[in-house]
Length: 67
Image (cartoon, rainbow, N blue to C red):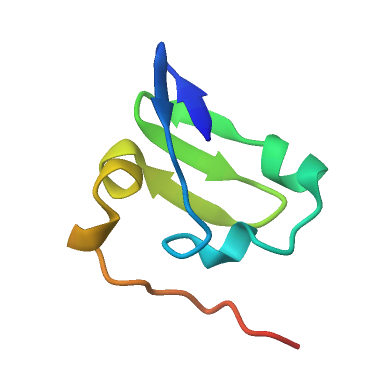
């Protein structure tokens, strides 16, 4: 879950797999540089509230690889 601007947004591991096996401290380290734009600096992940609320509109794209 992400709480921002008095809204709760659910982020499933199915839609956002990059967060699944990450230490909680890195997930909690999130910034909102502009309203509705979220950045996780430890993970180099950028998402907007639209992507979070409507992941079906955005195919998964990532350079994330299991090593």
